[in-house]
Length: 177
Image 1 (cartoon, rainbow, N blue to C red):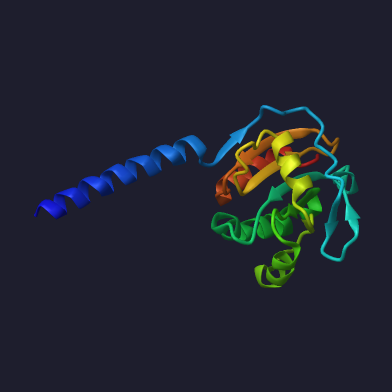
Image 2: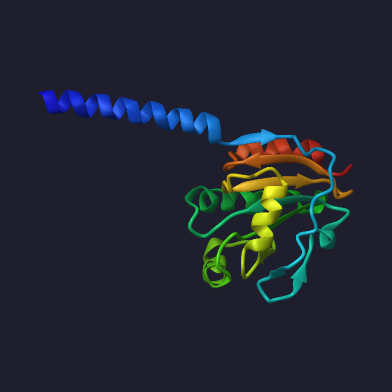
């Protein structure tokens, strides 16, 4: 009986700690950088090795979604992101997926994840980590998304996975007219 009580108390404490961590570090929209220019992300390539920067998509509403192959919440939200890309592509939305991961791991998973938007890699991950830190993601949490307007200015940041509703609420009002 004593072991049952100790186990129950431990479970309650763990649940409370998990909830507190979720509330503190969990999904959130921030706007601390709203209106600032998005960093160029020089040094990244697409999966074919071609250099890419954020300027390649200037004039479009761009959702930059940092992710990794080992990140469960990242993998879970990819189908919703792909669906948003399909739904809003013709209205000016472009998703891009910089992977904070080994390029070979990324290449081996991309086909099975059914990406319909560009995936970017950085062999050293230095540029991506530097970019995320510049964007106030100093803890390196993933997934981490930044919505960038057609003018290259940051509209919002979002740390943690999107729900379908959160994604729609962020994208729809910001689509180009």
